[in-house]
Image (cartoon, rainbow over the protein chains, first blue to last red):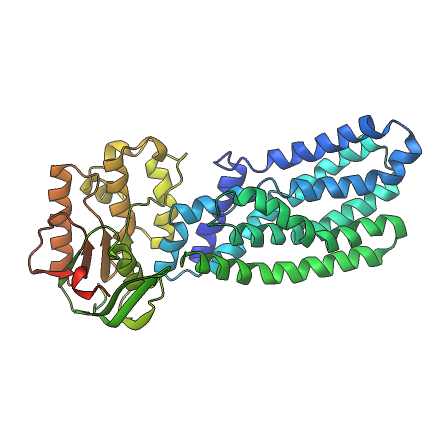
Length: 219
Length: 194
């Protein structure tokens, strides 16, 4: 319990305290930038923007999830944090689980907030905005879990950042299909399926991440 | 300190296609120290990591009755934080051990306000020494511990290890530099090369 508190405190301080990652602001700015550019690219027709805007928000969220990945675990592995924690009997799974919480907090709620100005830029109505926000609430934990799994798998690789982006996109397709699909059907079922996928990914992430970090020691 | 005993039986280690060593056995009890010597690439660091339990040996087993502490070339502290605050994280994990007295023992007191990324090689090593085993684990694994330390700091560190051994700890030192602690035995990895 002592260790969980210490880990969570460090992770949150690094994420929100302007530490080395600076990872909170960059994805949010990127996300808003995409929403800003889209009307310039396709033209200002309100009905076109309103119809496609929700999907654009989802694609922007997915791409924004790639940005913090290279700083998520690699610096801690390189500097021996995981080794020193393992020597003290603290499992990699625990460290990764705590990191998942901090990563989602730095990424999910800020994107949900940023979706408000983004929806204004894209001219999305209140009903669709509600579906987008619920979908992001259901989907961002899954995106954070996928990101963490990929960060742990690419931890020992040079050029891991580029590879991480490439790996995240196909794995995130189910979240995108159901999350953005809920906009078209307007129903709760898409959001429920998104939440189910997220739960599964969140449950797997600590174990997959821990195993990947241990395997990286053998390289 | 917890009663310390380390026994490794018939260890072998392969990295890639190369078999680094085989048939290596070690038995150490309270207060005993072993220096592992060998040319670059002989597998000193791999042996240290196997004894730490961080690397699986290709063959053989490692048994220890105590926790292991590891000092290597890395410094697990956040670079942007002042040294004193960077230690706070490990202080919570280790339940203390980073007080003013601990810092003074390694000449780190006046560095407490300096961000970790501005520390010199020797200063980083001194910080790593404190981080590795202020909790007094029974087995202290030292991988090139004297790298970057000046003559005075190296002498102080060897006294520190000698005091640790006198308290019943076990030390395994991988280094080609001479290391002076009472009762130090030497193991030449070349004798176990495949």
